[in-house]
Image (cartoon, rainbow, N blue to C red; front, side, top):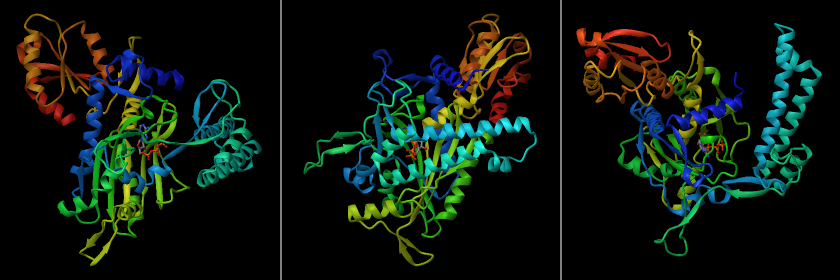
Length: 503
Ligand code: ATP
């Protein structure tokens, strides 16, 4: 059994070898934390976006979509707080010259203590089975010691982050004896703030206001269009505006493949509600979004909520939906109750009233906002890593299979004539032409049929249609299912219906 690190490496190389993801600019040795989606990757990514869009916009009558520009007026990022406060604390190791996020170094240290606690608990579970876990956590000396230590660090760390206490973060790193994973040394620089926005110049603005930013989130494009949508969209509070688009962040430490990239895509929805009703809607969206993930057939045990104890100054509730990536539970989606902060800020900076007249209460107010925000690429990684499996088959051979949810799979059907003669290719082409207006199909008549099945398993094709001599006699084909590998004989003429029903 591969360990998690090996498994993650296998997943990354599978993504490249089977045409899902290529490193950007590879012939020039790549560009750090930037990736290109390849022929199957783009299909999977589009299917994820479409699945999200349909469930948010098409299935909710009170949500509409927009597609705002990446470039926006620079004042927007002043108003949103990104110019002044969209920072990460960075620290360099003087020996390895490697750069880290100070907060991540501390978080990783806390995670290690957590691991130690879990190991003790696991040992006890094996020894005294069944045992009272709560009592054990309270009474076992080592577990208590680790738990108290962890709580102490967390308390100090949270305070330092709130106070923007960079010197404190450095002291904490030193006190905890955190070493650079590359050099192994504790020779750290001071901690500095680093703004994550990419800036560039635009020619047409006057007064020197020519520095514009590549948006670090799509949400602001929604806020600044709130009034336009309200005036033209015949929408009534509560209503939502959804958007899918690129975002850019100059991440200090961009590792972990497509989990943390400098250019990525977000699927965001801002839900405008009556003031005072935001927590009701926050809980609604928390549940709805979890249902969305599980509706794809993902495992409930791979998901958990991480409710934020420490809230951003503009939020009155926040949670992350975390997913069990090959490198542990990490944020996949954020759900935030952002109060009326953003619209208020834009009112102040633009001088335009961003208010809603509520015909039911006869009141005019700035709506409160509940946001759901998920990274397309992180969702891609969640789906892809969940789907990847190496299997031993009954005959002793092995196969690599991508058990992608069928509706997200890039190729839905492979059409495979058993041999390249006896009119089977012609029949295959006929079936291909019948299916391809409805599903993305792939025709393949090279190599032995077993190898072709393996190839389709490796790219995650849910169904293979095999054409043999019997097809020419009675117009039936074998339909092979990817996960069970079971085959059934079905009439070729019914394939469109059978596959549509399965999907
Ligand atoms: P993290 O704490 O992991 O940096 P974040 O809290 O900054 O994430 P948000 O600003 O809430 O993330 O962004 C919403 C979503 O956008 C995240 O849940 C994630 O799915 C995605 N996302 C954010 N930054 C990146 C990135 N650099 N690469 C890929 N996806 C990202």
